[in-house]
Length: 107
Length: 254
Image (tube, rainbow over all chains, first blue to last red; front, side):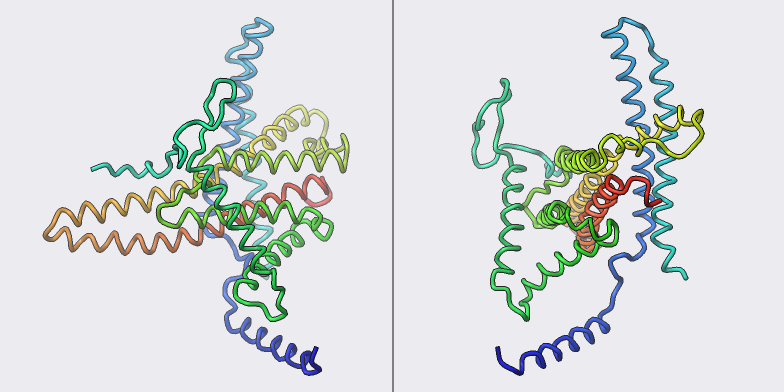
């Protein structure tokens, strides 16, 4: 190690800082684009409805198949409604996350 | 003229024409998908090991790229999960680099985009949710299931608990569909505009001049796809962090 190295390092650090200030672009936690938000909320809602409907069909099928009880379409109807509610819950939670992330920037 | 924009997503045997082996009567092929998975894993591993093997104090371009991605994931984990989240750094970093390299490799012409297959992204997100459940159960035991019980009067819980369970079950789906749909849509768009260029160019006359317009659009869309490739890897990784954080801290952060 040469004795001049810490000095070199310090100078390099200063140069990096200066370059960083010069090229300070959008940082990593910049607010997401509107289309990104729309797409994210959309998938949250739709996937919950799909899961709910799938579970409903599954429950009806399971009762029919193993217990020989005709529940169709009660399971489907109930789970579809629950799935839709879960979708709205998802959207609410996601939008809260997004606005919580954007909030510190606004002040 | 065969110009199907979806043709690029076809999974087919690659290099080796006959099945490798059989599982329960189903032939298992070495597909183009498998080949590019191997390529992506090798490329990511080689990139990370070779660039930092020298360990220079003043990094080369390659080394600083590797260091930036390391610090990027590190700070992402710190900001979402706090300091004790760094234990899961290897897992999240692996997922991030895999998705990032898959997305970027897919942008190279004549390659296959492995993240445009729902089977791949769904398997990845099932892994994430599986790890989340495993970590949650090991850290919190049965208390982990309080994740499904929001603070509410008991008569509302009858309704709320199933909703929370369904909401939890949608996570692997929304996580995988987001990545898959973004890659699929982007690559289809590129292929559609590329076929416009060829069709208009072949039409001759004024049409050939007009074919410059979709070509310029391709350049723009390609730039957008570069952004999407990085962004989707970031989104996948940060959602992994958020889910793991929920498993570790349960209701602490709300």
